[in-house]
Image (tube, rainbow, N blue to C red; front, side, top):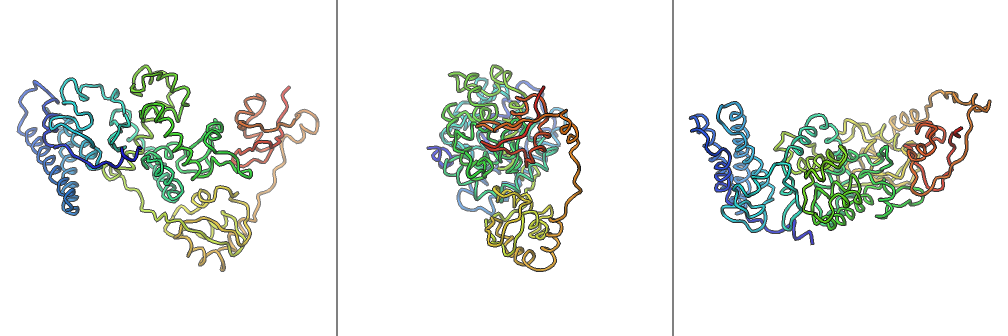
Length: 491
């Protein structure tokens, strides 16, 4: 059972002795360090020793004092590393290694039998034959028995580059994904918890795939918060329920994703990176590339060079988002505090999700409004379709009182209804005259199992996706099996 891997008791290796060995390997044969460098190294040694003492305090039950010392030690290493970078003769890698190791120890990641003089991950001595001698990108991330996710993420160049992207250009997307996930957590997390899979992995996949948008649809036809392709979704029970594509259901998609990950972890001998890559590029392709050598690194040129750039970026991006889920404070990242307790409301008057968004406004401190959350929690509903009184909607519990105060009586539901009833002028179909004259011909196409709108358009080779969607008044390019579409006829 994977639960045995994730919850075994921790036995922490002595940090000071391991760091001393790392320091000895860092720059053998180098010149005698200057007084400034020596002082910086002394700070590092003092911080690591203090960190080990703090860990012992936490384990002994003195959480408050221990946690304060842990934070102080991490801050000392971060500040000293900054000075090291501008000090000639100072080796920043010693500080980076210490910092990385502190984060892993803080997370409780080093588990299992360790040698006093060895690497807790492998039991191998940190000499020229150990992991330290391997190229960074070749350190395969293996989901070994008894280890937590934090221990499995190789902090190599690819993951560091993805961390930078999440902390800079993708930062708004990461925050949006976090907010969306907190409100959907009660639906999505139980499936992962039941499968003994790390919650951070679920978040990392969702952040990269959809950013927490339940109704996201890719150009290739992948759909839902975890972006299942139609055929793969069918294989894991994401069928159509009364016309609703279950790929858009947060709970169902999380359950299917957990089953997929569990299945492929077995196929790839618990190699997490290969499993994540299979989720992106397809398990068949990954199986052909890997063959029987399931211990091979994702970054091995025999694998890495054969994958698309999308998949090369996808794997470290998922792992980096998962790492930030575990260690936000260590990267100067602050996720907003979200009260995601689930609740519900029974409509006292007819209203659409869009109308509710207007009358709720910024209730609960949600400055950007509640439209995305209401859609995510009620994926079967058209947000513009007015629902009759008596319908029960899923909402965050913190919205139950604001709904009663703002959306039942008073000016706000009247305003929301007025805006909802407004309509833009109807624009005449520019192709109508041509169709009337017989210049543009159309025919019918019945949607078959496995079809996507993109695939249909490519098959016809005569129109754009947008044109077909507009001709058939499709919302979000959503089609269902058996639906009859009007499509341009190729000549």
